[in-house]
Image 1 (spheres, helix red, strand yellow):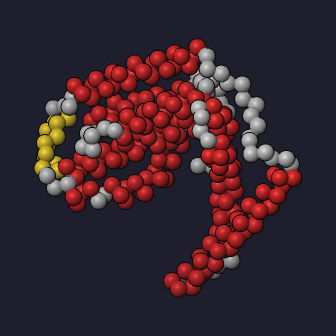
Image 2: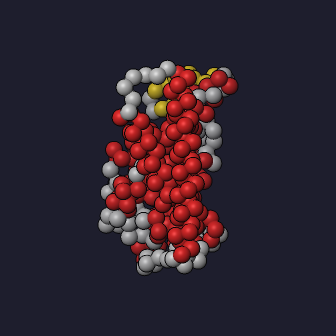
Image 3: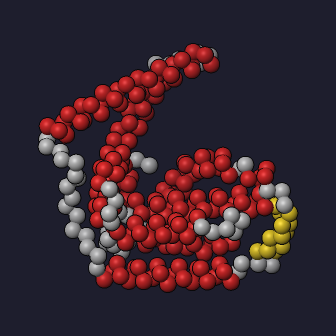
Length: 257
């Protein structure tokens, strides 16, 4: 997820973009907590929760292709941990989905529930970041009482992680241009280790130079913000709709339990 794509999407004009950052941040956190709190074998209830982030993406003019690409990009990590539930949950259970009924195990349900919770929470986070400029998001965190040191660290992480990734891609590209054949496992591993070491050393040097440059410019530990977003009537309506939606979803999940 390159910062140019994020900045372009977050700079669009839509009803979701006009919301205050605190509204979107709090509703996203609450939605994530409610999704994670669902029973470990509850899969059908996740479909109710998935409607909200999907609606945000549509109203926020975020391309679905972009969202799917980002979800797939980070999915191997969660799949690696979720697949172990298939080996531990051997208790048979009956699954009913509309007119269809079939037999499965608790492990399969846990596996599907983990993937579903992951997809919903990550999609909600993408909707938040893609519809909120990061400086506004940092300002929202600060206004909500998050410690200043954490806000500053997140700001630095967002800004310079992309420089780290770009430098790594440049090293890989330079290496490919200078390689004519496969050198063997041992030599390839030695080459990759040297590349990683060089990347870390140059990153430390860059961090020192950046620190000196910011001190020379009078950085006092706070990021100045020009955002004029305020909690207005649109935020009240958005919060009310979110509350009603969550109440309906909780009622439906308990009724179907």
